[in-house]
Image 1 (cartoon, rainbow, N blue to C red):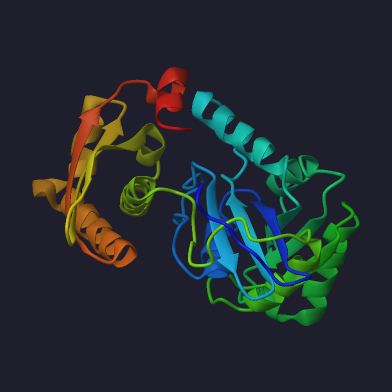
Image 2 (tube, rainbow, N blue to C red; image 1 turned 60 degrees about the vertical axis):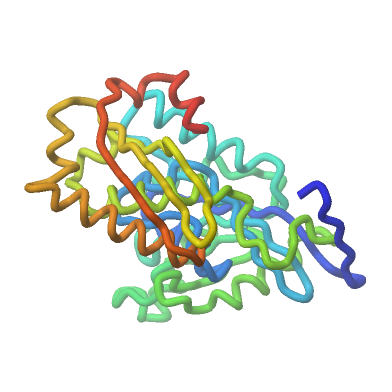
Length: 303
């Protein structure tokens, strides 16, 4: 990054945009579509996104640097969730615009909790996601839903999208562009994230764990990269899955090792696609008791 120098045409814009919202409104899917590549993990479970991932989209007129945040957690109170919520608040300071994502036809108290944290002096764009849902197909009802939310906060603009199907993503970029300050790009135009390959490998494994395990377990679990070797045409990656208790290990491993094998295979295929080379991936499970409340350990994991 130090050697990167860039010029840009007159009127070029570049800035930071935070994406916020309650868990599961589709923030990570939205960012992945905005930048056109999978860098933020998506799964149906709340709290899949644990680190703020910066995604970058560059075109001829602007560079958008997106900060994806964990959904605000109001249900579980522990050191991990307090840290996640702190990440959200920090992500909102120092950005040029904020995208507040809500689910079409569903506005809850959890949404209001997030809305209370929205900055008053930074432009906030309301983005209504999941407009492909049956309930949202009634245009009059959808407009009434949007008008209702807009009475509760002064939004700078509003856009409707379907992140899952990539609908109206280009419209959203056009809506966001005027809120970015004029300036030269901060990153090379072929860069889609400032995260390391090591970090992305960890995120991919975490996504698979969330996807394939039961409701409760993933919250008592994290992953760490023990070894990451980028060789000629092949990456050797060793990842440990950390669980809280000994009796959680069999849940992750599955009968005859089936579940862990499935998680590893899918993660390896995603990594090969992302890194553009062969990957040798070894995933195993170990016990790290009480990690969700161990502040020092959260610091080590970069949370």
